Length: 314
Ligand code: ADP
Image (cartoon, rainbow, N blue to C red; front, side, top):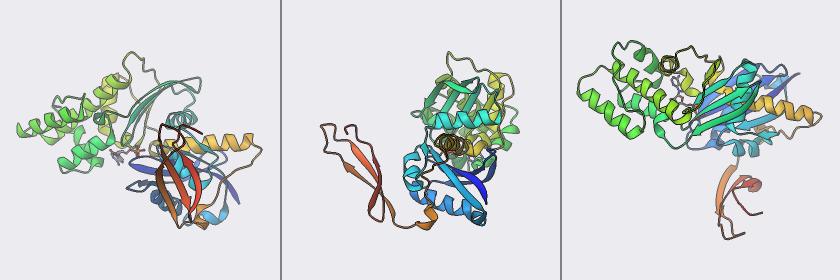
């Protein structure tokens, strides 16, 4: 029987699950679309993660992160539910203990994390501007009729990147449409788009901050070599995309869970959801506890409340 640790990162665009061994190496990972239901994506990802491997493994603990971390934690009895900054920072340090800056771009937000001596000391996060996100790239790729996974290779062919406004998704899109109408080549528009996204990212998140090497680029958008190249051009030095770039948050959550469970003398709250995969649901309701009237989110299994959050009063 092999000891392992589960990490789950439920993002707005994708859900990531990893199985990590005692030495913190990833044994298996799953990356799938979150779609309309984070619960369904957790169940589907879980099934996929354990298919064919489960019998020889013992899950010693679980950690969750991402915007849906509380949902995943309620479902799996996770030992920790950590914010993405901490989870991404921890995983980056486990790849390179000297890392100083982490650039993370996901589906609907982007972050910069500053690290010293293996610990996060500052960060910045952009959740309001769509221009600096993967979903914006997805939309532009689909408008140009190409898969997002091909942006990098196409942008690489560009000899004359066009100038595109990077401050706002609406302006960037209208600039791109304008360039298309002027007959600019797709590769030049895509290279301009990558430059614009990186310019916007650095203006939004890194103004007044020093980006110190080594720099690690992670999150789903790190698959996009056009964005990596645009960062290197803007920063003037190479950046590193770790092998597990797409599951760094889930990996970090697993590492944090391992530490917590070990501190607790090995006691874990983990529950194997494959023994109980049906009848999971979420409900929201208004709290009447005080004048704030907060929206409460409730995770239920077979009608039984597993977790509830969202209220400001007790
Ligand atoms: P989340 O914010 O939900 O955690 P991710 O970090 O997985 O999402 O980022 C999702 C984004 O990553 C997508 O919107 C897409 O732009 C980008 N992406 C994912 N896979 C690829 C790929 N193979 N090539 C280029 N871009 C990709």
